[in-house]
Image 1 (cartoon, rainbow, N blue to C red):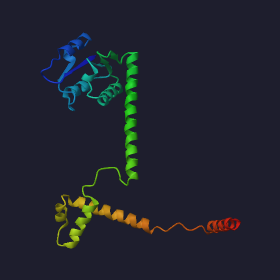
Image 2 (cartoon, rainbow, N blue to C red):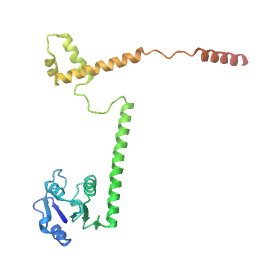
Image 3 (spheres, rainbow, N blue to C red):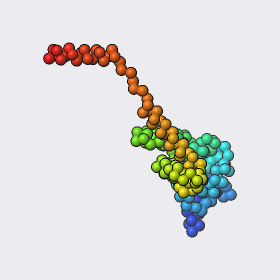
Length: 223
């Protein structure tokens, strides 16, 4: 079955041109989903209904590619969904028909674009994390309470033991749990730094040292 999808950005615009083209391509009027919403809107309710109505062997027909996807990324996502569910796709303006040999090639090209984009995102993420690690930063969200403020909070409590932890947390605009986690983070960093400082030095290889000194003495005597 041919299922049509037509979209314009506002109710002031007309769908007649798209609907006429879809009917001429073989879509029954009752199976044409019509949407009046801008392509930049994330929530396109009628498109959702259209995709849910599709069954294996159906063909989704649009007048033009940009009627279906707001961006290449979204278009790839929809095309992959259709392929996974054995649903055909036709775009009349671009003469794309995935039920033909050329159309199957189109599916493969889109799949390659999708994989290429995922690989690029993965490489950029890894490169960003590696660069951050070299600069002493870690990935993830920034803490709600910086180390400096967490230390100040601990100092406030030490100077006035009568204060409750909840009161100190409110002073710094965080919850008591966040305050505790910040203190634990600081303690862990200090313990790691102390362990690194106390780590014993590598033992001296006395034999290697003796050979080096002997070699230096021989070179000096020759000079």
